[in-house]
Length: 434
Image (cartoon, one colour):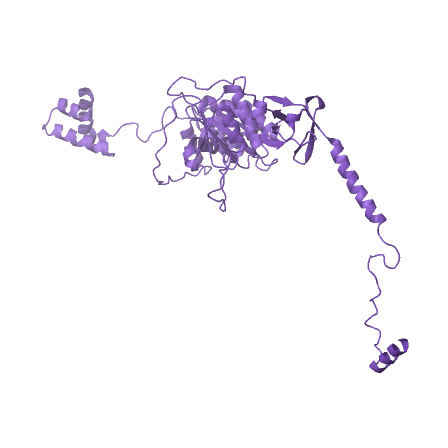
């Protein structure tokens, strides 16, 4: 008998003793007068057990058939043994046409030893930062290092961008977490939705230059990284997070992906970068943006369009500054680039030019408002090789021959091995010679 049954029984006993009326008992119990009258009859015939519901302890008429349960548990054990109940229930409905609630499946998996319930941990309270109001106001940006292919292929990194207001996501798998790969994802985002108001990233060296321990306080400030410079040219603010918890939305995005995406890649049989990105673009991201996003508080989209001066090929590149030599050449990364003859002019000698190492592996050189035509000077490399060859041949030609081939005289070799004459003999020979 439950606590509710005992409380109800106490009120019914008051009615039986005629301390209160059936109308008053109905008001206290929140029941109808008709039902109180019926309970009083049961109390008279069956005693205190008459207040217990007749269906208690009996199976529900809407329970799932035993065959369906056995089939579902068998499939889960064979194919989705490491899946959580929620994800396993989704796969049962999509792949096997078995509509089972996630909580029902959770109980079945616990009873059959497939799933072990975890005790909730008491954690320190963390005050969540409220979402931004508008789409495009702030975009969280980060990279997750994980065994995405579970050993079936090369190691991959997942770079993702997540809108703070709606959790709308964009991501791609890469082989290296580099500036170039992060710029490729930024290019894709800018072409699809435009320029957001700001990006929220961590303090990794890709986004922020951190002074070293021996950095003098009077030394000039470190400039922006290549990504920081690109965002400045695009008019986008870069905000550095002080902890992973500060950008919790994208951290939770990665937590979900490390469960759902990993299992989806396994089911799709992905074994390489192209297959992983194909599944990510056509299956996982559409599912995420449809199911796990929400409407922004303000329906205004604050993304700004790209303007004519925003050349993504020029901005999203590795930019360096070089000085033009007197022979109108530029040295970049051990290579020499020659400026076209028709563009040479005295003002170029000693001038600073902007060199753009672009994502398509081309090199563009900008002087003031225009670009110069340059070509890789192969003659420089050939001259260096010829110079090395000539010096080697000259050294071989000057090498001495014969017993003194090493370049050292041997007149002292046996000096200390010859015995010195006695003093009297040396004096006599000296006097005779004089």
